[in-house]
Image (tube, rainbow, N blue to C red):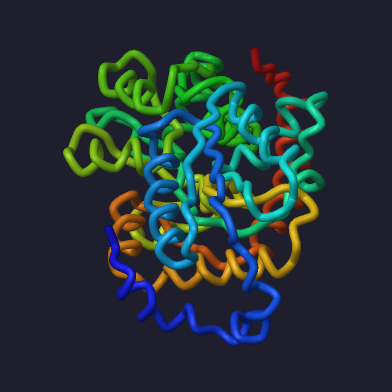
Length: 323
């Protein structure tokens, strides 16, 4: 656990924003805060959530209680937050499914641009195009050549229909003008295992699931679906280097229900920004191969504005349907 002294010593916490709004913010939080995670306990988002909850408790003086609400691709937990009273007692920490849920559940009333108040993007967690180490395919041009030679026969796995990794693969195939067959697994880790055993050809999955296998020599990266090379993996090209304009981001973000008081948004965002200076937090994200952001509401708002229509177009064009 990171101590209170380390947090209080963090220079970023003493920002002018906090000084200017101290009076307005003094009443929040005045009771325990619920942090909804729309996935099961023990996964990457849950682990990050528990770390952040402890740090926020130490800094803000109230418990931040994790509430796991898995199911329906994250929409169950998201609905619980969207319908919560906007008093600063309920937030959601989730994945970039915030951008795709409106496309996958169009009749659920969960347009995240309208039912949520952005707080921050927590981190970018790069999705990697990953293949077995002994595959003769060593780069994206070779992969596309193989896909064109055998239309529909190359298989790629993901952690489920409609998952961010499935959508990344579908967008990749669309951008390249190739046909590949998606194979759904109960999580990204089983999909990665299927690559290693030769059950499928490749996987679109985050550094969390793939990096240990690459470091162990069992798998290799062809590219990242981020728009540019990942700082921690500079030797791995971005798919956009071969498919100009292609980008499929994977990230974690925090939001609250629409109508949150601005003072609450500012205080929570500023407190989270202060955590960037803590070495233990930096180390945790680096271990994941992730780029820590925690830089406030603007980036998250921009991502929702860009990604909701992007995934709506893709889901419609590819005919993707969730069960």
